[in-house]
Structure formats: structure tokens, C-alpha cells
Length: 238
Image 1: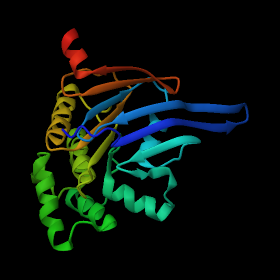
Image 2 (image 1 turned 90 degrees about the vertical axis):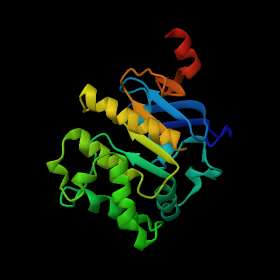
Image 3 (image 1 turned 60 degrees about the vertical axis):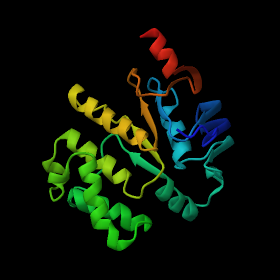
């Protein structure tokens, strides 16, 4: 693991929204560093600020105060066109409800992600799509539509799509929230393998998580970091 501090860095990040009832602070002065190659879980109940933090991380939204720097880029300072290109090259997102395009085959969903970002050379895209599907264990379903796959298989397809452009960071929003325990374990193993390959994997969930696969578990509450558990601390309490 690369121990570089601040591969992902939040400095005094706050986010507030103006409502009819006044200002609502969703994120309150968060300082957070995630190192390259870390496997991190960000947990918290509904309303704790997880989704807002995720939006800051991916550039979907901007902080009201503070800065978000990822691999030396101040994400919140990019204009929309530069941000779209940067996101496509640097962050793969796995959504809770998969968000695969239903009228395209699994292979075509992955190829579309490559076409959109245009990082992978065209002549290599088909081979890369096949390799990614094999990596997540669903190569045999390449020509099927998403509806023909189980929930777990669709989630694996969504992971393959998120990896299409070889982004160094993978962010997963409630990746096992709609899956049974056996399938959830398969997905967790896929993430652990990606970390072993050097990816930075960040899992955002309301579920209580534990396990040696996580380098850190960060708990949010009322828009602030309420606690942090490291792998060493988990092992000591095991």
C-alpha cells in the first residue's frame, strides 16, 4: 500500500442548504484523509451526512466551505466539462440500485462507459470488457440484458462497469443493501481483491460493518465524524 497521506483529503469541509426553516448543515467541518490503496467504510444512520459526503467526494456537489482535494486536484474548483472528464478518469461509482441501462447487454453497458470517457483505446475495449466480466465472475452473462441477471450478478456487472476506465478510486454506495448475506460476502471479496490490486475502495453504508478487510471504519453522526476504528483496533477486539 502506498502510504501517501492526503490522496483524498477533506479540509474543514462543511455543506449547508437554505430551507424554509432556515439553514440546514448536512456536513460540519469534516477533516478526513484517505491514503492510496486503502479500503475504507464510511458508516452512519440515515441523515448522518453520508450521501452529502459521497457527493463531495465524487464532485457531484461542492462544499459550502472548505476544500476537497483528490490526487492533487481541488475537485470543487473544476468547471462542469473538466469535472466530467476528471470523474470519468479517476472515480468509478457503484450505485445502490445498479443503474445499468436495461436495453443494453452487460457487455454493452461496460463498453458505453469506455466510449463516454474515451481513455481506453477503441481496439482494446472489447477485450477489456471481457476481462472485467471474468474478473467479477460473470463472463458467461456478457450478452444478457440486466433483467436476466440476479441482483448479485447485476451488482457485479455494475462493479465491472465502474472499473471500465481503470479509475484508481472505487466508491460504492450501499453496495450490499439489497443483497442476501451470501451474495454480499461475494461482493465484499471482490472489493478486497481490488484493494489487493492497488485500488482505493470506499464503501458508504448505513449497515454496521466489521471485518479485517477494512483498513478503517469511519462513523458519521449528525454531519460530523463521530469515531474511527482501524484494522489493528478491530483485531484487538476480535
